[in-house]
Length: 94
Image (cartoon, rainbow, N blue to C red):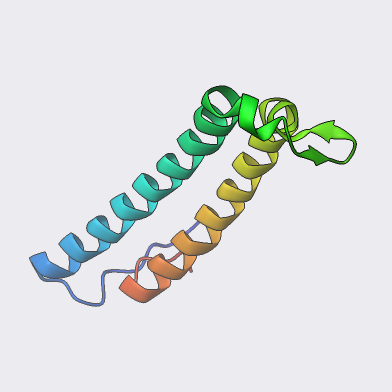
């Protein structure tokens, strides 16, 4: 079905660089997700409620809709960045 190419750099450093970039991308995504969902939706809800967005208080919007939109954007960005990372390290799907 799918063929996975071999790493362009078959040494230990090539694999280590790939996984380091992969883990970094995951960690950054999780930090953004945490800040938006927990920080904006719970901890900073009162200060954000002083701002209106689309007729709703911004804190309420982040708790109800904004975190979901940011999560969907993170999924798309992760998929795009991982495809680029796979191509760079020669492990992309043929």
